[in-house]
Image 1 (cartoon, rainbow, N blue to C red):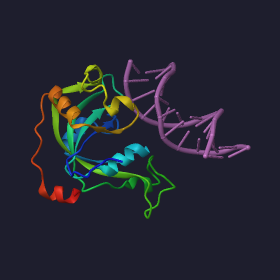
Image 2 (image 1 turned 90 degrees about the vertical axis):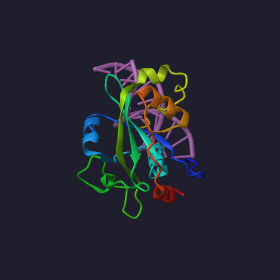
Image 3 (image 1 turned 30 degrees about the horizontal axis):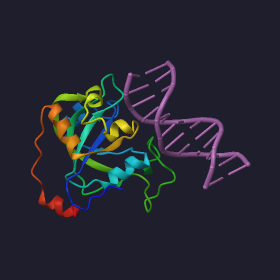
Image 4 (image 1 turned 180 degrees about the vertical axis):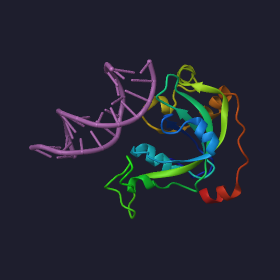
Length: 174
DNA sequence: GCCAACGTTGGC
DNA sequence: GCCAACGTTGGC
C-alpha cells in the first residue's frame, strides 16, 4: 500500500482511451468521475488518493500514446464506484454489494493541458523516466509517479505550476 | 491485427 | 491451493 503518513500531495498517472473520454471533453466539462477501474492494483491506487493529489491524463490505444494534461483529485477520498451496482453497465459486478463494494472511484478536476504532449517514445527514451511504473507495468491503468518523474514530465510538457494548497484538503488527508 | 504480459477463472 | 486455460489490455 501507498505510504501517506507524511501527508504530502502524491502524484499519479491515469490512462484513458479517447473512446471513453477525450481530452477535449474533459477540458470542456472541467471534471470527470473516474470509474470502471476493474484491476485490484489500480483500485488500491484510487483508494490511496486524497483531495489535492495531482494526476497526469494519459491517452492510450492511439498511434502516439502520450501524457497530455494534469488533473487534480476533487473527492476527499475514493467512494464506491456506482457502475458496479448498475446492471445496465458493462462494469456491473454481481459479486459487489452496497455493504461491501469491490470497486472504487474518485472525481478529478481538469487543471491544465500541456503545451507539448509528452509522448510515450520520449518517456521511454528519457533516463529520468525509464523506471516509471507506467512503463514497467504496461497494463496498469492507474500508476504511481514519483516527484522527480512528475517534475521531469511537467518540464517536457512545457511547464505546470502547482496550484496553492487548500488547507481544508490538507486536514482531510491527515 | 498481432501478440506479450498478466490477471482471472475453474477443475481438480 | 495449484495451475492450465482463457480473456483483456494496450503497445507496436
